[in-house]
Image 1 (spheres, rainbow over the protein chains, first blue to last red):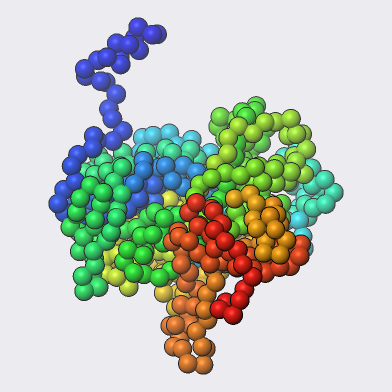
Image 2 (image 1 turned 30 degrees about the vertical axis):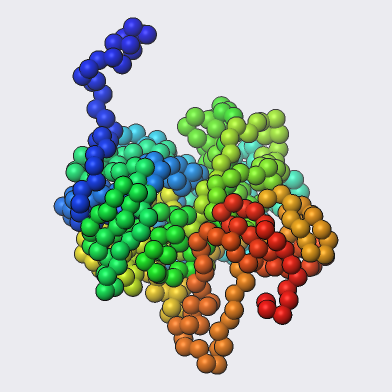
Length: 413
Length: 85
């Protein structure tokens, strides 16, 4: 093996094609500039090229591909939301997810697990029933189940949660899935590259030029670009970019932390979420338990991790799965979540002509990656909001017509 | 940030404190426009920087103002609210 590997490595005609084209100089102008090479930005580039024939596109990334919240989330995909706007939107995303590995010719490890949102109080049961009815109305597989059903699905769960938060029921969402998150960014990036899109990593946007209410160019750390259309898909850095064009938004930034355990033999088939215990957990293809909790309690523009988080999350995790007491935590990390007051995203056109937002993705953005790419590409190409995103416009905060999705957030309320 | 200086109780673990957002001035609802009021209700200064924030030391219910760098997570000063806040 080592001899073959050496020959492979030293070969001048490297047989393995590159995922991405080698970096080039920036061109003087592009039809569309996308800020942020995470899943959302790359997906938008991919669909712009594939469905709208717009290939003179640059995706600018301050760091590296998928290094932001795309690579920091806990990879849960579901569509059991609360508002009609949310359910339709996220369900369109779940439909897209199912064919994505084929689309990319890249294994995303998309794995349908079944998703439980546990209810420990009467009011939580009431919200679950409400969500189940809205979901069913829009054809989403979602139902309220009792504690027996939960116990049968996962025999290792302590249904009483150590006596202080007994599970009264759960919202069960059979299509709930997980996927390998980095691969999503790579798949969209490669597909976009193959169609002529340029991805420029290590290229920070330092300013956006607006003349007469219209976007005319972008200043970057590597020089100036002329363009009439800019899509901002930068998650936790959104306020810094909206400041460049003078747009006010309700977006505020709190860190969201997560951690994984050492690898274990497969024992957890499903995804479990508990709003009351502030936890969510699933087991990855590598056997690690992927765990998350609620938002950090105060505003912060940094990705530091804390011991408070690990301690708090572990304590709640042991209430639910006491046998995990000997399992070690392997890694922890954090991402900057761009939160909104109604827990719905901010998408579409803005008061500045040619400046489009795909933002306010807080703690719920990964699952929406495909549908965001698709609808934002449509919105940018036609300069008119796609029908699936009209409920998420920035205008709703001026008109008091919010899209209240807080009851469907995993945790943190 | 693991410790915070309460203006009344001194240095305490940060878990004893609750964050209540940036100090902001409300427009006069009788005279401001609908847009100004909606801006006050919803919009926030989400960019990093040194901000004046409301915090509460919960065991003693002491409300105070902290000047904090939201990028470095460093508290520069804390004070009890005076006439200007």
